[in-house]
Image 1 (spheres, rainbow, N blue to C red):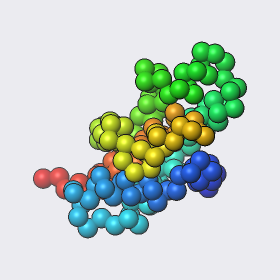
Image 2: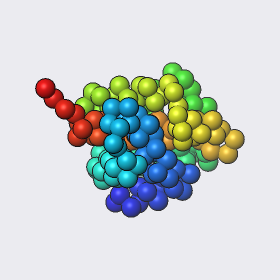
Image 3: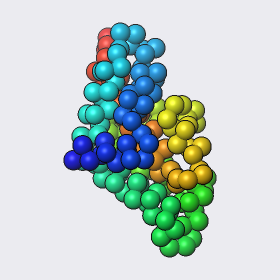
Length: 157
């Protein structure tokens, strides 16, 4: 099913290399020898997890239904307008971010505020797409992949 996730992301304008670039930017200061290919593998590893796939399917379905005006009110207005106090999009993304522990949640919070790379482009693209869930889900995937790498490279005393 991870191939289906890649296709869904691509359909929504997200290339996994964009996510891997965010992971590299997050982890390079702590692991100078880290490569984009290692970050890409970490992203793929996250996308292979069933709970991540279910979160993506759910969030992307809600974004698409909102684009089509098919959600019941007031949910339609809330999701289509990316209401700041809604928070369910962040909760779904934090479930992804936490699969490698609390370091993923910390990274998600940082990414949610900074909106670097593809996350910022998705957040700003409000003309023809609803990305209420997608921008946060991408941040969650990047945060989880970053946490996976942090655990792998961690040198404990």
